[in-house]
Length: 119
Image (cartoon, rainbow, N blue to C red):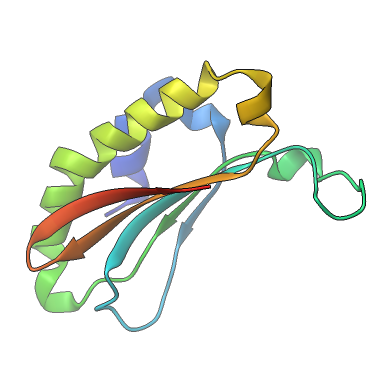
C-alpha cells in the first residue's frame, strides 16, 4: 500500500492524520493496518501531549513480498473504506471519546481480513 492509496481514500480527513508510518521488518504478522487516536491528554501525571502529535496515527505493517499485491487489493477494497468511516465517526465523537486514546486495526489470516477495536 502507498501514501497515495491512503490519501485518496481519506480525502479531506487526511488533514487529521498526524503520522502515517510504513513499518519495516519481516512480514507475516497478522496485523496489516492500524490506526490510533492520539488524545491530547496524557495519563502521565497531567502532562500534556505535544499538539503536533494529537490526531490519528496510521501504521501500515510489512507484508511478505509474495502476498503484497493481493493484500494491497484487499486493503484498498475493504480496509481503507472502513478506515475512512472510522475516522469520520471519530471526528464527530463527543469530548469524552476525544480525550481517550483509541486503536483500531486490521488483521489478515488465511486470506480473511478482520478488524478489531482496542480501548
